[in-house]
Image 1 (tube, rainbow, N blue to C red):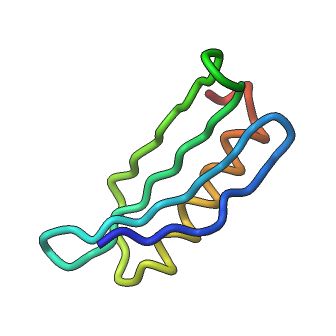
Image 2 (cartoon, rainbow, N blue to C red; image 1 turned 90 degrees about the vertical axis):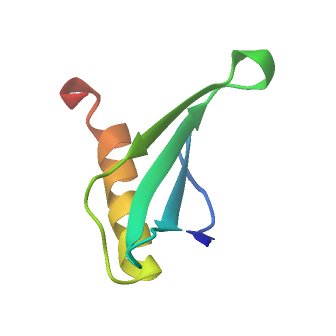
Length: 76
């Protein structure tokens, strides 16, 4: 089972958090960060090792990490 939230537009980026239910019953967060249009689209997907007890917690973590990635380009 996967859980998603509504994508967030941050400037030229579209941030899409995702939580995936693992075999162990935990939720693994990831986030897609997309920019561009058509054949010039670039999509970076960040997957995190940290797991959470609920999809909501995992989605919140992925959202925060995606926002942080967009806000701090020098730390990439």
